[in-house]
Each structure stands twice: as structure tokens, then as C-alpha cells.
Image (spheres, rainbow, N blue to C red):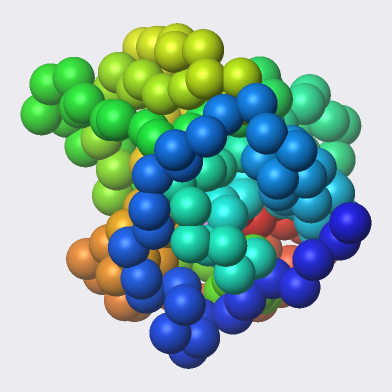
Length: 176
Ligand code: NI
């Protein structure tokens, strides 16, 4: 089911979410289906459970190769529960981000260039990956939602914050 995406200003987006305790349940599968339906309906690159008002440490993300977004790197569709992120090295990278909870806007956001992340799938199976670039950026963006952090809070230069259609006229946009 497509759910309403909460927008910046809603206090529920600023809360710290609780870990998933029970895996493989109908409730978790339903949450994941709603997240996926909602993300796809908005053409998102990722979505976190608190964005639909569910304060659990669950995110999904994924980007298919799409001619409409020639610059977007492919990221496998991933369900990530109770994530733990460990930056690899000191290097930071800045790039544009958008967010379904901050619709229509883009900001220039610093993120760790490389990281290892671990977590659990819907059945409670643990997995771990080392990633860089756009994949690393999407994971950091989504997992920030679990701690009540929206990307504008990570920005260092508010000169590079604006409306997508003004910054990038004529270009479709991916939002997270
Ligand atoms: Ni977001």
C-alpha cells in the first residue's frame, strides 16, 4: 500500500527509531511492502520506515539502471534492518541529495566516501557489504533517518541548497 510520506517539520522525522526485535513476521513483511510501494510510487532511491511514520530501524533502497537518470549508479535493491555503519578511512565526498521528506529541493551534502555496513534482511539473516560512492551515500542518507537526521542538517554550505527545478531545469530527479 502506498503510504503518506511525512515531510520535514513533522516531529516524527526527528525521533530515534527502535531496533527490529522480531524478524520474518507478517507485520515486518507488510511494512516492507508498503515501503517499496511508496518508494516506487515516488520514484525514490530509498526510503526509511520513520518516513511513513513507523519508528523502526528499517530502510530500503535500490536504483536500477534507468535512461532517465544516466548519472545514477546502479544499487541493488536492499532491505536493511538494524544497520551498523563503519566509515572506511577519513575521505569525505560532497554531492547533491534529495529526500522524499523534503520534496522538490536539493542540497550539497558531505558523506563518507567509503564504508562497511552490516545489518539483517527481513528474515533476520545478517549480511555485510563494503561500498563507495553513490551506494555509500544512499545508505548514509537512509540510515540517518533512523536517528532523526535529515540531509539539510548535514550540509556545510547552504549556498548550495535550492529547488530542483531551478538548480537543474528540465532534469528528472531521484529522491531519497
Ligand atoms: Ni530521505
